Every structure is written in structure tokens, then in C-alpha cells.
Length: 214
Image (cartoon, rainbow, N blue to C red; front, side):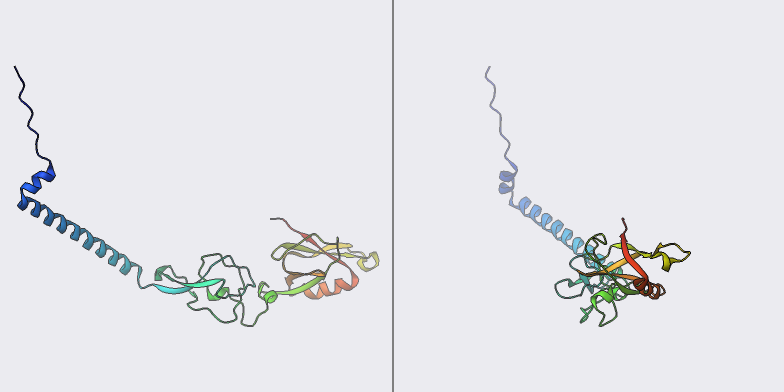
């Protein structure tokens, strides 16, 4: 007994070609659904924009900046940020001849409170509040290698006759920051009240620096 050959069912594409009305209805439905999806997406985007508020143009650092660095077009740029994320005092333009008083990281918004007073030199801009810069003369081999932003102790060694009954060696200033380094001196930021005593120590004994670790 011979088997009857199977009847192949027409594919979806062939069926749609044979039924133009059905094909038109499906295409219209797909168009409506697509349009609805786009409308919902646009609506959600508008809601998100309203939630974040109007963008604010702010000045941000394009690289890590240290205290004393000058702000210019090579180290900063203007970008739009959501207003709720903009910190108080954010700069909205690049101020002329501005230097930083504190470090700013790459991508961070530059705030007015981070700036040194206008006209401040690079070294003066690095001075913490309440300190003055004092240069400690150095000779090769008398102090460890130091760099700007290192922390040091300022040590004084007195001659026995100058020390009297006191200790011949002591720390005149502890954990102070290095603000400049040259071939002949290391400049450190010391508290104002320490500066006169350090000036006297230069004439009475040897002054050196001890580098502190992290």
C-alpha cells in the first residue's frame, strides 16, 4: 500500500503574499507598536531631563592638578553637568591668571574655594593657611632627597655652649610640607609662630630636614 505524499504547508511569507489584507493589517499593527515604543522612549527621556533640571556649564580639570598649578585651557575645559550634581561655588568660566591653593583631581569640578588669591605666586599658593615659607639652605649629602608636597621635620642641632642646659638637638617644626626645592635650598611651610625661632636657629646651629614616610 503506497503512502500518500505529505502536503507541504505554505510558509508564512507565502501565506502573507496570498492574503494581502492580512499582510497590510500586520504591517499597520507593527507600525503602531513601533511608534508607541518610540513615543514612550521620548517621554521617558523628557521626564529624565525634567528630573535632572537644566544642565549647568562648569569648569572641570582635564588632568590631576596640584596646589600652585595655573588654570588654563590646557588643564581645564567647560562641560555641561546636571544642575543637582553641581557643587556650590563651581566655576562657570575660566578665570584669568588663576592658581590652585589645593589639589584638584581629573574630572573634578573646580570650585572657587580651591583658588589662591589673585596674583599669588606658585610657591605662595601652596602654603597652607596660617603658615609662611622658610628656605632651609642645603648642601649635598646633608638632607635626604625631597620633592614638593613631601612632609618633613625641621631639626636643629646646637653647639653645647648655645644649648646650655637644654637638649642640643630638637625638632623645631614637625610634619611640615615642602613647597619648593632648588639646588641650594628646600623651602618649607612652617607655622607663623615658628618662623622667628627658625631664623634664630640658622645663626646658632645647624638646621636640617628629616623626610617623613606615608
